[in-house]
Length: 142
Image (cartoon, rainbow, N blue to C red):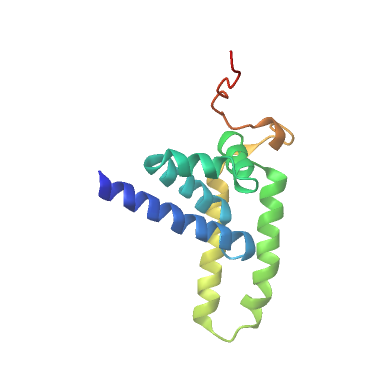
């Protein structure tokens, strides 16, 4: 049990790091890594899972995508940005191996986007998806 908990926590932090890198780099999909990190933390540590789900930046994204998915407009916008950033590299690079790698990467990203639920536009705003929190303890002195 302890070994699996350590492996899930390690995997969660690794996936979280890749998710953060995916927010910055256009070649990595951030969302699947963040969803994977939330799964690993859910399996290993309630405290880390709660931290991730209530995080200012990651929490709303994970909850909204987990419950409603991405809108078609978001999917197209994200993929178009990635395609626009990688297309010049694919065209201008002299390396055939790099071209093949980037085309495969675009195909994998498209496959990941197809697998994510497609939400209706405006179906679930980020503000409407709130994490379930423990009720506050009564601190009144009687």
